Image (cartoon, rainbow, N blue to C red; front, top):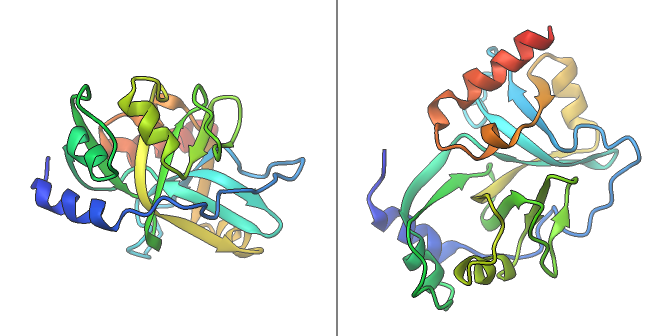
Length: 203
């Protein structure tokens, strides 16, 4: 359901695209859970993460970083969103949905997108996915040269060294292969159940 645009406008006013925790990282050879979906177990009782699905951007011995892909603040005009960054959006149509990426740094913006776009500060996750944390991706979208699919998020989910491994060992999380349709489709209400079905198939 589309929320009033004034909520989205307020979020745009806070939106700060900076080189966040996904920027400049190097993956370990094993890559751990990079590029996979982290799925909250039914027993997860932390309200920040209950029934969440997280796309994992970074995971190495120093910690982990990902974006929740099945919660949103609201939706509004893409044209108005881009205008908030002083970007000429006269040719842009359609809406944008702004996602809740996680509880850490809620005013920092991230664009998770297909790997067909690569800007100056784009961090390539794998051959299918990438993350951009600066305005080049917004300008490219306005010019019709942006990534084929994208997800806009505020904030992120982060773990320190060994923290995520401990939560997985405790049974708080499962992981499954990521697929583009599940990451980017608009049916947020069923993403957790669909991702959980992948867990059951694997088991």
